[in-house]
Length: 211
Image (tube, rainbow, N blue to C red; front, side, top):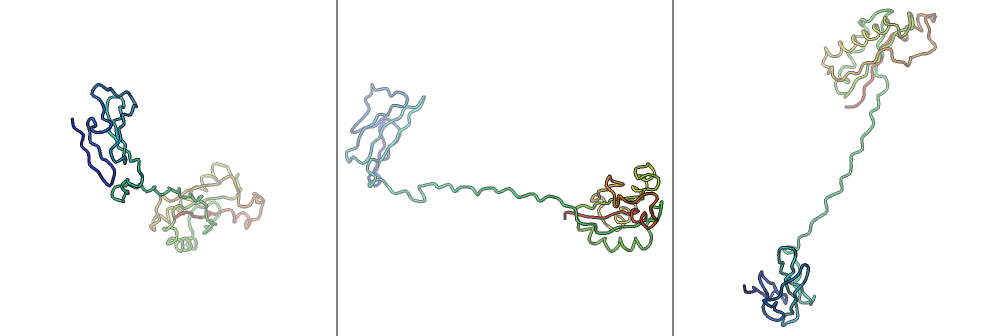
């Protein structure tokens, strides 16, 4: 098979097949793996040959005179731009806001008074925009803070607040309810404290976080 060759600004382009001209490979010569069979052109601008790699032959041409080699242009030189570094977005910790509203209840009751309903109504537009709403319900210590009765009473108070708000368009999936949690509003209040002091514990605290 004849060699196809063409000069490009002093550099020889070689096609597939055995090479002809100066440095021609003899018919009896068998290239071995990674052995280069080279010859030199008459103008001394290039070297060429065949590289034997495993089961195939790869022709090559190498410019030996840098001044005669063609200049690479944007059309002939592929430039791969580096992908911009991916900067992970910082995850902001979820922090509950301060108590937005404290809803008060009468002794042993879980129903909302007309006054507390009006207070809740003013908060509805704000709560609709929030990601999560926390309701923390408490009772006074009469009968024991962790008694079954008081825990049920605290839960019923939280549910009264939730039902009022959901009926006015606040998404029920936003609510997180805690009732009679381990912490206390005022650890100094006991069953023997004044009614005014105990009244301060009959509440549901409303707070919200995220949007």
